[in-house]
Length: 213
Length: 213
DNA sequence: TAACAATTACGTATTTATACCTTTTAGATT
DNA sequence: AATCTAAAAGGTATAAATACGTAATTGTTA
Image (tube, rainbow over all chains, first blue to last red; front, side, top):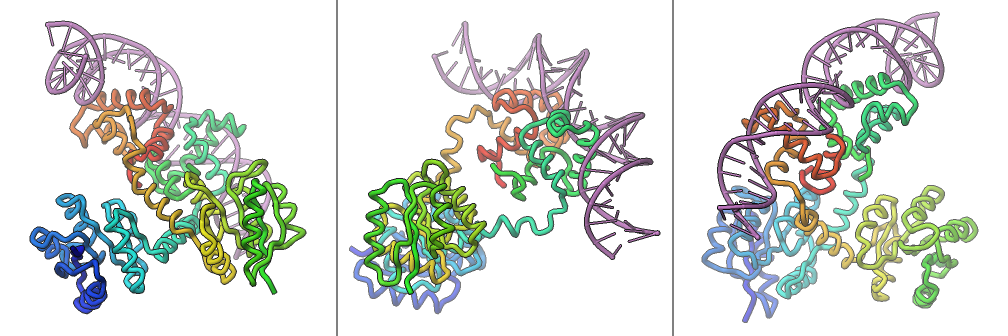
């Protein structure tokens, strides 16, 4: 018996190419095609595929929402996401939604075959290129996240101590400053960062990687 | 001319095995061995290797600090990290330090060869197993990070609003509660979490993934 | 039914944080 | 020489958060 693969992508030509590839495989067959998320969810109930190869960027309903809804109804469905470079923002959301694999659209045939075989055996398959892209974007993030931090060194130092849970008085003591000085710094920090209060400042500091966690 | 590879690991036998593998390659030669981070940094100045294969867990100085210091002096040095499963916490720190590759210690020979060839050409090489492990740990993180959070739903809801920068009064208004009720909740939250104040609570909430960022 | 936890709420007091002000000094930039 | 910013510090006032009590619901569980 062959594993049934459904193809979901808004470009017909791409689906046809993928179909031809899959039809050369002895253990897989194409179980239907859809061109957007809504059509896919409808077809899903009729065709009951084992695997879905799902594009991220589609009209009507994007791949993330489609994957999420499909997996609610069919938790055992194996979804392989198809993506292009530059869609890093969606990786985590898709992984979080529960997809079993990730392929770049310019993957070669061997990689598609490998991905299909891996997921039917219960494994996960993530395109190496895509993963390395992801890791690199994480690596580059810290430096480009703070392009022009308007905060002075002293201000950053005080933010650090605030995040440690210290009060203004404690910070003043530990830095051998007047409490009023630390007050001034705090006021300037809130002004510069546009934060309303301590809570939002801490969130800001962590987002901007001003503090290690 | 051969590329010079330095081996850094606290297990002599492992180094010897790696050395034998590398000596079978026509474009690479071993340029020295070190058993910890301090020894490595000393040897680095004499031997000037092109590539370093660096263990994470070592006595004296761990791989992260060693990599950081080595790259300050020699920014063009290609460092390939050697790690075992279960060292996920260090991946990001190593990537952040600027290493060019990641290999699992039980990688096969072909993978080691591929990693060496990739990094000398200026690329990055990350072991697929390791990357998938990382992605999976990210995927599983949200559910297993809060095993026995002592916080009630209402308390979590209030933490969320605190992290949004809202004051007690604003939270009360938005939830249609008395300010005093929110006061009580905040007091209970600090008690349960052991936090001293709002700042440390926000850090706690983000660490425990009670809030999305 | 009794015990427990969650949610709601109030009183009182103190401590912290924030809002607007001003000022001095030192160092960097124009 | 004039200008600008960071860093330090103070006055005054209000707003917000924390500390330490108490207590009435409600629902669940033992």
